[in-house]
Length: 337
Image (cartoon, rainbow, N blue to C red; front, side):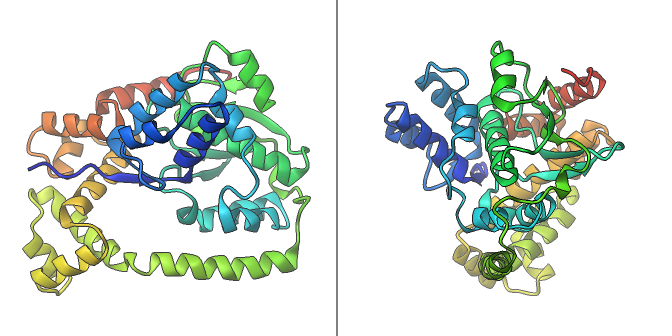
């Protein structure tokens, strides 16, 4: 019996459907067709969901326009924490610290380049996920504009997917040149921009909101202590072959029955945790490029490479070999895309 497909959670799914509704499209059928419940979508449905959303609206840049026009407060309390931060840097730290409250799909990162420029980057979901990429980057650009009063110097926008035919219009909307087929999606800020003051800064309110959001985050993360322990035990056993409930329970010093009950209380199962660990580690090891793909398959507990390749394509929409080729090509391509 195959493991259930992992779910990914992000308010972006609902926000995109809201944008469809503003275009006169009834999003109910799309949500039902792809198993969207609340803000959670089966990973296997991501590509088809994005394709159906794009097909529903003739306007090819609707996703980036939706991100750029996102209603204030769409991301809840964490958003108002960003808006009251003293500087863009501290707003970013608030994003980073509380990203789990915002999205399990896009986990942004920050890297500083040799010349002092900064890239806020978002992982690629595969070359076919243009809608999700453009929506998320559009949200990021919108937020930077609002936090800086339109003064933030965005030097370049990077996308993991190929440049669209509407490239010139996309660059106009985002206000920066586009670099296509990159290793990930990013917004590149000129040197020194992270220290730009936030125009809506309110330090006393920022301090109060920080405490409140920390409390919410702690309440969300506390139940996952067990899941973290389970996933750590799963990771240790993967390369040995099949992960067994008995062995995981023994590692956690629990009975099998107790472990099963506690996993059920978390609305998950050992099978789902194994799938989650495999997915996360597969993406890391494939994209790092340090190990042969055959060894990656072995480390993840697959007895045959073909089984791993099928699973990776099911998870991400592309084969592990194609993922490595795409990233290698992106690293060799000119920065201007």
